[in-house]
Length: 75
Figure 1 (tube, rainbow, N blue to C red):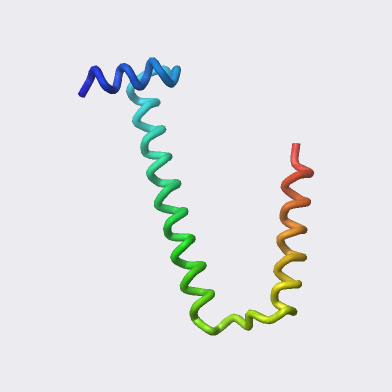
Figure 2: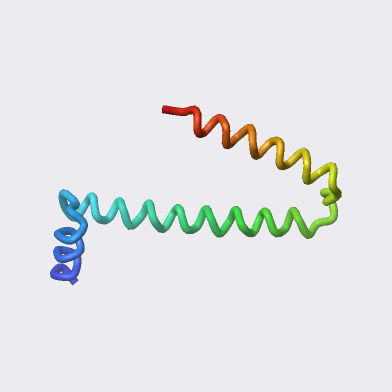
């Protein structure tokens, strides 16, 4: 196993085992958060508590546009 980790470290240009392990943990956390977000979005959209009409879509599109504009303006 140590040989595998050393090969991975060398291939990715990481400083050591600790950095490699932290990277694995960050990746696992990101995947878990993405899965949780997907579940929450699906649950919200199927709950019938949100009116999915044209007004909702227009408001959502405007909010998304504002968020994207802000993120593109960041240095």
